[in-house]
Every structure is written in structure tokens, then in C-alpha cells.
Length: 129
Image (cartoon, rainbow, N blue to C red):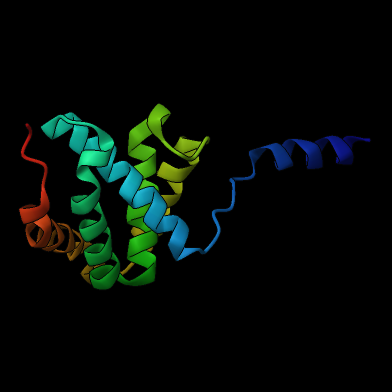
């Protein structure tokens, strides 16, 4: 009986598993981008679709699978209640753990990937009405 209680309590501590699905990462990253852009530049989420699709493609190309996944999960974690992922805290924690497990060289390249991706797409940014 005691063993069963231990197993059940540990099962409750298990982190959700996020599928290895680049199409899902794209949805998460673009959604997060649109929400953040509305906060920065105004407009409606749809106004930021072109910029965010470009940004998503650039991050995917530059970062590769692991970085792309970490950025997408981190973006959803940063959105909190606006996240597409119900357990946004698990998304945030998974992103931090996965990014933290990458080599120091890879980690130091994160800001360059973000900066280059933003600069490549800035011409598509929403300018207001």
C-alpha cells in the first residue's frame, strides 16, 4: 500500500512531455511573437502575421531543432496565461532545462540568432494605422 502511494505521488510530479514537432514549435513561436508584438507595437495579432512568420522561419533556419524548440517553449512560458500551452510553467521550465543543457558555445549564440532573425524581418513589422 505504501509503495502504491509513493508511485502515485511521483506520477503527479512528472513533467509534461512536449512532442518533437517542428510544426507545433512554429505555431507556438508565431503565436507568442504576435502577442508580444501587439504589446510593443499595437494593432491586432493578425497585423503581425507577416513579421512573425518571417521571424519564425529565420529562427528555425538559424537555430536548428533544439534551439528552435527551446525558443518556442520559452516563448509560450513567457506568455503565461496567454500561452497556447495550458501548463506554461512546465513549458518555461523545459525550455530553461533544454537550453541550459546545450553547449556554452550554442548558448552564447542565442542572442545572435534572435538579433539576426529580428533584423531580417523588421521590414515586415506593423507600423500602425
